[in-house]
Every structure is written in C-alpha cells, then in structure tokens.
Length: 52
Image (cartoon, rainbow, N blue to C red; front, side, top):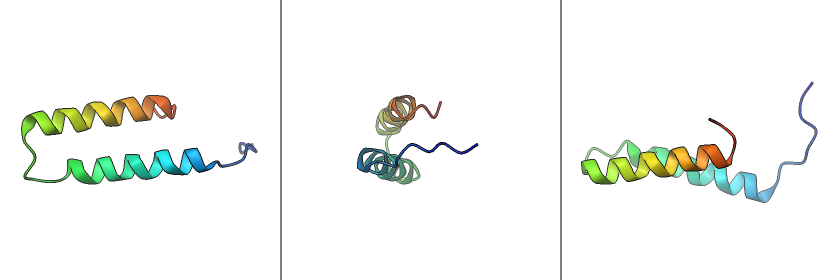
C-alpha cells in the first residue's frame, strides 16, 4: 500500500538538491577532489532521505 504521508516542501527541496549534485557529478572538468566531495555530499543526502 502506498505511503499516505504528505509530500513536503523539504522533501522536494532535498530531491532537487540531489538532482543538481548528480548532474554536477557528470561534469568532465571536475578534479578528483571535487568528485569525491560531491559523492560524499550525495551519500550524506541520500542517507538523510533514507534512500541508501
């Protein structure tokens, strides 16, 4: 049965941030340090959103 809890502005915001981070991760001009920092941010946000 689908979750009946309301979809909040915070959830939408977090999803848009995650989408932006993933898009930036595809940039070929990123240094290895920048790529690692983005991956770390993505993992943190996914954990906060319980997507892990």
